[in-house]
Length: 161
Image (cartoon, rainbow, N blue to C red):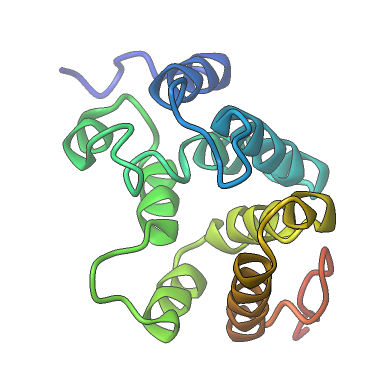
């Protein structure tokens, strides 16, 4: 394989993600691809790059075993996309501090995680869950937002110029 081999287009990444997650459902029983589409749109609407949008489509692929880490390593994607996907992939033994430090240390990953958290914490999505699950997830998402410096839903952290 040469350095000039064709990269996957954003449309191809979306199609791969949709196919890989086709059989999955979210906690509310909805098709999981709806979450991926919402996160990709959230990244796009926040001014994200095509690389960040690609990472949004793939953000749960390795964690959910929809695609393997080996697939990702060999995929015709920019290294930045692979790095963002791996940054937002939870790993066994990761506490929230280690997880969020990795996201903050990876260029572009914060915007992907911000869009993911915004969709995960959407009151309409949470409303259909059992109260105990809704309470647990709301606290979990708030803690991750705090560790990432995302002070309020859909609000980027203040810039340190």
